[in-house]
Length: 66
Image 1: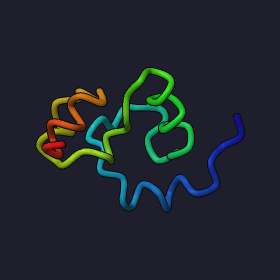
Image 2: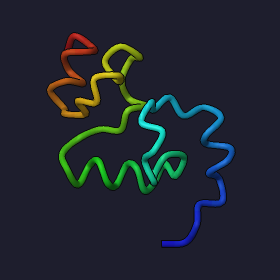
Image 3: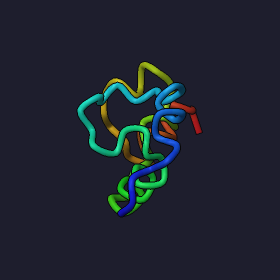
Image 4: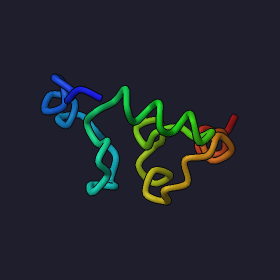
């Protein structure tokens, strides 16, 4: 896959605390990766829920009280 041309800009607002992730800042790669695993990226979660690294749909619903 080609290098993301928006990566530096994306990193300015990326809220993911998993800083060693190779997809951090490459939003389209991150989203594809997580959806393939039936998850959502960390940026979809409030800060306290994101820190658990549980990216499941169930964790998303619980964090947003859905």
